[in-house]
Length: 265
Image 1 (cartoon, rainbow, N blue to C red):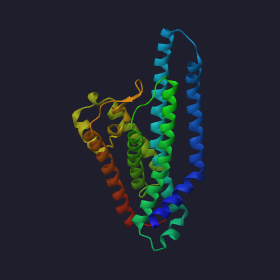
Image 2 (image 1 turned 135 degrees about the vertical axis):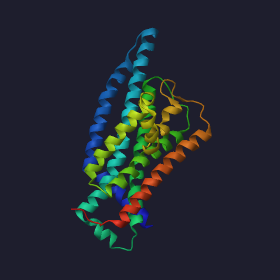
Image 3 (image 1 turned 90 degrees about the horizontal axis):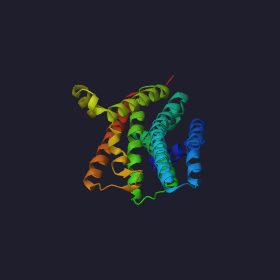
Image 4 (image 1 turned 180 degrees about the horizontal axis):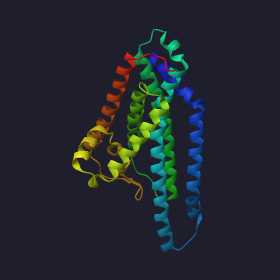
């Protein structure tokens, strides 16, 4: 009950957070600007050969937009987790909250659950954009919706847990700098693994959150807008990895939070 109350309160605060609303508004404007060429191409009447070439251009644009949407979600999850805890510690309101019969782990669990509620709404919107962009590209999805929902949620849960752990040690602005650096490193190690020496690559694969394992691109191709054959064991391994990674960092956040002061100057 206490965790749920904090989660609902945190989720409600996100809907009123001016920074999150501003960034989401700017992001929506960027998406609309990127979609305008697709809308023009969709209305063009051309020959079959030219239409096929234009369809490839459209699908490339769709892929770029979805990559941008997915990456923004990671940063949003990290910022929401850091800001929800960091602001309360900075303002001192956490002292009033913890004066109640509430364990510190319950406070963090409520904050974390509130972040996941926000990201669930984001993923639903992302799925809607995905289907709309597929329609613009002349394709339809024939896939289970659960994979399009669960994979991003687990991916964002990882970044939220990492951010929650870091904010128990650092200011939330510094946390975002570290998260952006981590996201860049992960993208680098996932995009060019063959060019990296094994003595660097192997430890990095153990330490870094390899969110590429939780990418829908493993079983979803925008060009076909359909699901590739993907055994349930692969789903189980990937999702177990993601959940365990998020759980480890959440538990680390709880351990650090139990041992530190509740205010931050």
